Length: 269
Image (tube, rainbow, N blue to C red):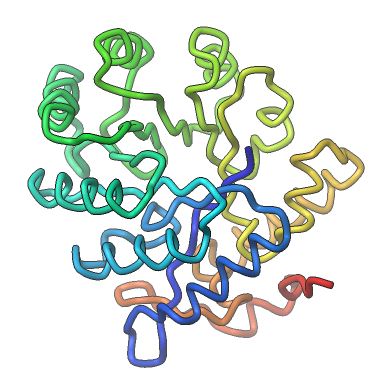
């Protein structure tokens, strides 16, 4: 399954543009994207309040009725996390993603208590997130296996871009691992037992990413060129610039001159 780490569009006043979001989801669905993860890292969840995140989840779930939607519902207040998770469940989400506590590098016992505390209050499958590039606190293999064995977690989104770790996890827990990152798209999509692959570039080039995911390896160089060009031009800000989606402060819009080396977003036929 190919899922999009969904971008959050903002209007010129910095407000969430739900109409643009709906159109964007429908556009990607038409290109063959099978699932969506709203308000995660690419969705700037740290810059959205709870009411905005819930509105984004509702809009995506309403727009993608035949797709898999797994919102990220993390909040520093566990009660808000539970509220967002339960709202997503009532509106038809397949599951939710909850990263470990952010910013501080906490030991694995604290992470274990975090997930166990939420599991007793959330009535929808919970996926953890392992993202060492963005989150100081990681989720070790032994901790993941323990939480899975206890029924606390339904799986994990692994954004390490480490093909060896991902292969190891998939082998031990087939169907429960979502590999996140465009750099691992080629390797991960060919792993028997992978639950899904999560892409960010699919927001701008859904047909290209879908074809690579479906095994058209001759397009690998085109994908890698876009990965490199987007990172060089400003990463998330550059991708949003290609789509003219706007950013929310403290993320400033990218300098338009940096986008000259990037292909425009796809025009679907």
